[in-house]
Length: 150
Image 1: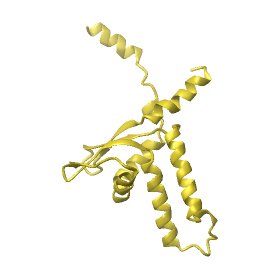
Image 2: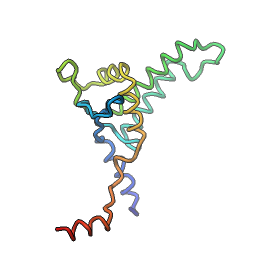
Image 3: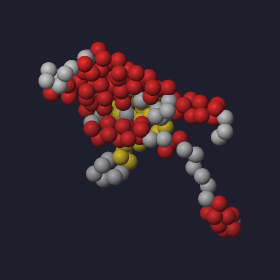
Image 4: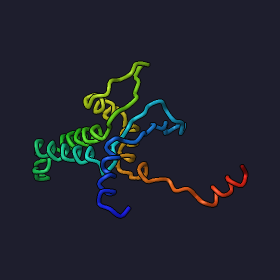
């Protein structure tokens, strides 16, 4: 990777999202809930961050002196902004509730993320990671051993 276009292409690839399968934190088993999450360098991520900053300004969260801020109200607004931002990282999904597919909309994504800290936390960690977009290197020793076995 030596060209500026190589770096620019990273964001384009990340806009499409990478698949995240939600893990049940108790059993450590994969669920059937699948989310495609945009990467941290994507245009989608930048749009989500801009949305969050605009919402925070509209809610005046950034302008309240600590003495005037109602802690519970600020926490509620802050959580709503965080959920809204994460919902905007989701580019598509395969989510079912009561056996029925849940249509993908930002409003539904916000509802799902607001209702489950488990899902929200996994999406938050995944959205911040570049790992899904790092090419996997082939270990030449393992490849040679595999070739010898053939």
